[in-house]
Image (cartoon, rainbow, N blue to C red; front, side, top):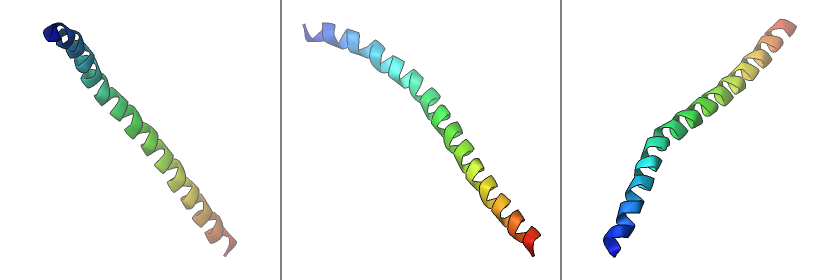
Length: 53
């Protein structure tokens, strides 16, 4: 009986392991875009301060 339960668990584990890299890649892209936006905002502030001088 216990073996039947394991047969149904293995495909779920395989599916999760195949989706994990996709989820991590999406997370990395979103974080990179957010960091780029922040960096651009800082550079814009610096450029405005330099123009005032």
